[in-house]
Image (cartoon, rainbow, N blue to C red; front, side, top):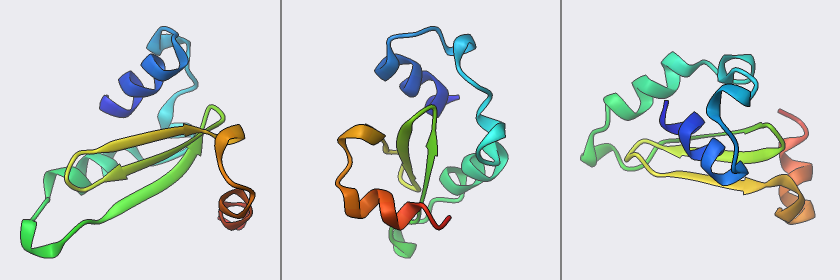
Length: 82
């Protein structure tokens, strides 16, 4: 829910207007990533693209969203193989 709400805010749109997140990533796995947070394990994160934005969800709850057109070319080329 937090990813969808944050992305909708970044895109200045209603969350129901977005493609379902489950079409890109397993939302249950994202929830589990944050839920099992353990400070001694360090940060674990998942990076994916959705609705033309690069999204990274960190195990400590931070979500970063960057429009793909603002990413450096190297970053885009690295994610093309996923």
